[in-house]
Image (cartoon, rainbow, N blue to C red; front, side, top):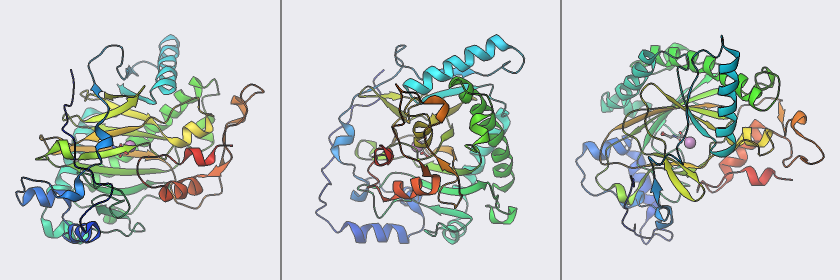
Length: 371
Ligand code: OGA
Ligand code: NI
């Protein structure tokens, strides 16, 4: 199946309009992309037009040679052989795609369903309540806006988001949105437990002791990003999320049934199809750095869609811009004469700060840390 047949988008590299004031006007509505759709627009504003380059690659899916693996974690605690098989598959996926899906991952499907519902409730609550919460102040406990990089990205994406840092210092319940407070706390707790398990399996996949990645605190910080991708009247002109890699250790993504997430692999875009009850896991830049390029931080994007809204929840395992003294570099046990360190050491904070300084055009900050 070919997922897209896209028309060429208008070139926007040098906008021939006052982009800055159109961005400001959009931001000041405080209602995000959803506000535009609620107003009944049939043509998308030009701030959302993507540069044509993004559409050059063909998209493929459903091809058995290029499918993101779906890995069943059932029984790995009881059955050593099963665990070994799972670890091998995780290793293979992390080395080639940087992406895999997991089922029977310990989080009850009812929690996943309620989390998606909670996100929908947040975005679909009264405009006045949402406007109150809209902010670009990243020090707030709850940050809700449209496009974190609105003023720096070359093109605006068809997406609104709210974000909470749920660990290591969780917010008070009152700081979370009233319409999804309980489920955010429950989901975060569950996703952190799953994170610990995934880090054990990934440690084993690297030939390290199971505790290694947890001992160096790769699962210490979690930011939960809740995305809302409204139905788009002209999906061929824009993107739900532009091409990027994640600047964390790894991300656990809950997506709904709509689809549109794609991962880049050998110059092709491969769909990450929705699988009921599954969670998508992807390797981030920091895990690529500490594994000395053994695991890949896979480039990915989200297509805009006539169908919607699409809801997703991305849990970023990372302490982000918080001050911690921990320094990360290629793991010594993985290095040898034939495999010398390819990256210099850094703190998560410095890495993330450097990422923020990049052009936000999808290029990762990893090359800046190469030796
Ligand atoms: C992200 C991301 C994908 C999605 O939040 O970094 O890639 O499907 N999200 O929302
Ligand atoms: Ni991402």
